[in-house]
View (cartoon, rainbow, N blue to C red):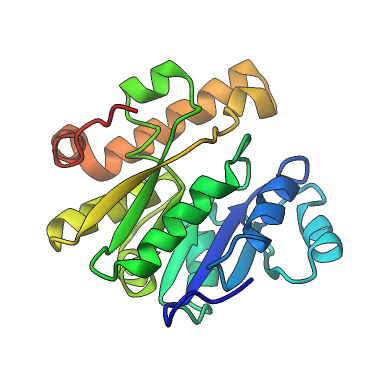
Length: 230
């Protein structure tokens, strides 16, 4: 991995029981120009996620948590230790990830220091995710200034609330946000743990977001970040 200019970007992958899916994501991150370091947080996994990362990806900086802290807690555990200007957040379960589009987004961020955050909107997601804006507003793939990310994490942000909390921070502080296409899709909870448990997890996620934002806050984000056509 080569450093592009003077800006340092670190990739951060929080994961929980993703031993079957994380290898493809880490392999791409480790070979993407402009990414200077890759961190992975094993958020108290019950499978062999941590062991897999440690054995197969020795160049990845692994943080292992004894208990599950949720996504926000996992991100906080690594972000506080990282030494970089920007943090590229990436979900561990991505499928069909396009390396060239990822590299293009990283290069754009490095070249234009006026951008405070770049959201990658997922172009391979199911049609219904576009309707509820899960492909961009809730996208786990984004590059954000580390200082801004740490500021967000100082508040009481839990698990699934991380992305919308970052969005709220950007709006409140009048930060410059752009979006860039990224061909990829996430794996639905129902595919991982079965339909009933998966639906319960998805419902819990949406309720958690509404608890943080409220309906008015969610509508504000939808208006602030209008839908994209691709």
